[in-house]
Each structure stands twice: as C-alpha cells, then as structure tokens.
Image 1 (spheres, rainbow, N blue to C red):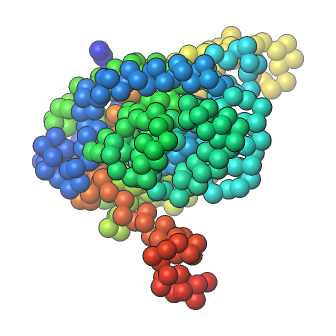
Image 2: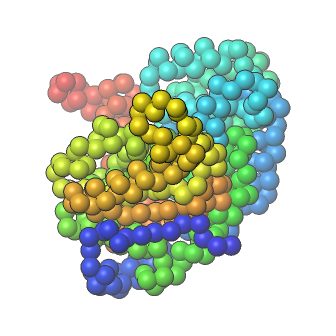
Image 3: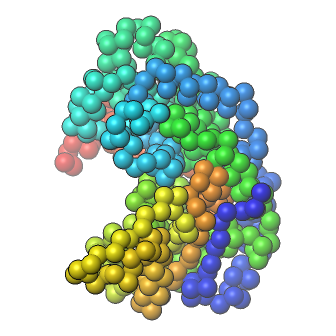
Length: 447
Ligand SMILES: O=P(O)(O)OC[C@H]1O[C@H](O)[C@H](O)[C@@H](O)[C@@H]1O
C-alpha cells in the first residue's frame, strides 16, 4: 500500500545541514521507541499496535456496533481526554458534520454524542433533554475508571438508563471500555455484567484511538475500521526507517525540535476544513501531555483556516515571532461543490464560476503560506490526497510516532502526565473527598 501523506519543509527556514546534524539523536530516539530502552517504555504498545491488535476483540467491536445500531439511534460516549478526543476527531472528519440534523430516513447509523469531558450541568441537562425522545446506548470509556468527569457523568446516565429501561434493559445498552483487570469501572462492569472492551495496559490514553477506545464509537458511526487500521499499518511500515532522509515522520519530529531551540516554542496546527477541528484537539492532547513537562515543550495550539485568518490572522502575520505553523492540507474533497455564475457579478467573483471550492481553498492556502512565510513564520506542510479512513489511520500513526520520537529528542518521558494530578488533588480536597482533609484546610485558607 502506498503512503497517503506527504511532508514538505522547504519553508521551515532551516538549513538542510541542521537536520542532518540531528541524525544521531534521531537514531537513538528511534532505538528507544523500538527497543523499549527509553523513559516510559511500559507504554509503547501503540508502536506496533496496528499489526498486533487483538483480532477477536476487533470482531466483537464490529458486532457490538451492529447491535447498537439496532438498539439505538443515539450513542452517548462518556469519556475525557484520550478516552474521547480520538473517536470524536475521526468521526467528525469522516462523516457529515451535520449528521445529527439530517432527517431520520437519511441516517443509517446512530448519532454519537459526547459526555463526561467537563462538569457543566447545563450541558448535562441539555443532553438529558435530547435523549429523552430517542433510543439510547452508552459507551463509557475510562482507563483508570476514577477520572471525576466521566465517573460522575456515568453515575447520572446509569441512573437514567436504569430508570428508563430497567436494570436488565440498561445492562444490554451499556458498553464499557476500560482496563482488562483493575480499576473501579472494571469492577462495576463485572458486577453488572456489562459488555466490556479492553484498553491495553501498555497504551496510554492519548495513544489509544486505534484501540477499542476509539474503534467502537467510530464503528458505530458507520466508518470502516478495517480501512482505518489498514492506513495505520501503512504508517507503521512507512515510518519505521531510522534514516531521517527516508522518514517524513522523523523529519517532522526533528524539525519541530530544531525550531523550538530557535525560540519557536508555539506550534499552530492548521487545517482548512472545519471537520478537522477535533483532530486538532486530539493532536493538542497528544503533544501537550507528552512534551509539556520539566518546564519544557512546545505549546501546541490550533487554528481553522480560512475562518481564523479573520480572527487570528493578524497575530500570525505580525505578532510576536515565537511560532511556527504545521498545515494539514487535503488535496481533494470527497464532496466537491461548484461555484455558480452570477450575471450581476456584484461580488466580482465571476472569474471563479465553474471552479470548485477545492480550487479556491487551495489558492487561499498557497496565498496564506507565502504571506506567513514572508511574515517570518516557518511553515511545515503535511498533505493528504483525500480524507478517507485509510488516510486518517495513517495520519494518526504519523503523529503518534512523531510525538514519541519528538519527546525523546526533547529529553522528556513522553508517556507520563504527572502534572495533570495537581488540579485533581486540589479539586478532590475542596470537594471534601476522604484522604484529603489536611489539604482541604490549607487550600480553603488560600481562597
Ligand atoms: O481514561 P481515563 O483514565 O478516564 O483518563 C482520561 C484522561 O484523563 C487523565 O486525567 C489524563 O490526563 C489523560 O491522559 C487521560 O486521557
């Protein structure tokens, strides 16, 4: 299978030599990833996952997706961080963005909604109001089983489901994705006899989209998960060459580290399709949690173009020069739309009549690229031919591998996230949860 992704760093504002000089470090980081000799080596299950995944469980995911489609027209996915961003990213990229609003007869698959990624009661109340008039199934996803946001959302939804469908009816409509053996959610699932899917021990949340974490909701949305995995397999093959000159994934990882050393410590991931907004959110968690530690790391941010050219464009063009852009550009839409002729031509755009939106979007991209480069913003360009499940599978793997390598180049453990605990500890203490009594008093004195 040919690889779907191209990478161009002609506008990175670096010398070719600078990249070559990084070759020994890249080789070391490559070995750390493949021979499990670096920090966090217990969390490298994702590296060969597209080939090693459990076929039996994969089959069960497909069956569950079919059952859910018969049971429900809404699937509520409860999860936060790595337990929901990946599936949401893939579903939004590969299905109609307005799917939920299409008439029922046009919808073959359930609509997927998300819950448990914040603590807003308004959102919860709105969702409860929405599902009242629909048939509902739930997929609760939590590796630890104790993350407050999904745990509380599941409490509310479980009570709702049991009241509405009875304990047995709810049992048949609740699907759990969690650790194979340990954790509060696993215990509950065993007790209640929910159908359960496994999050592998050696795959961290933010690297888990190609496990059952992402695959079940993605399959429910009607996306071909075989294709997605085939794309990821193509990625494994394409990005395992240690020679930087032959590996665009390693080039991307190395270049962002070179730019970081030159003070470009903000990376803007740019897309030209609103459908890719959540892919950028997924990417932000991937890189932010992997690299933002030990007082180091590029700040990952994202913008949607051309939308944000009318909001953030000014800053990018002329603000502080501490940023670089990584653009994901898709060459061809799967749904082309033609621009019509307008006799009056008041907007002066008749030149574009008969052309499609892709054409205009490309020219916007090219014009923006040159403007931003002229403004001193280094540019890295990732190009996909089309947004297909296969290309998306490869793109996911591209960024996962780049992230692991980049973290090692930066000199951090890319596979832990100790900093996330600080807010949790304080919140638990302020909520009065047992075990935090002393801290509660200390914090309250400071508020
Ligand atoms: O799947 P869970 O264990 O509920 O974790 C969900 C998310 O929250 C945690 O706080 C971590 O920072 C994330 O890496 C993780 O993806």
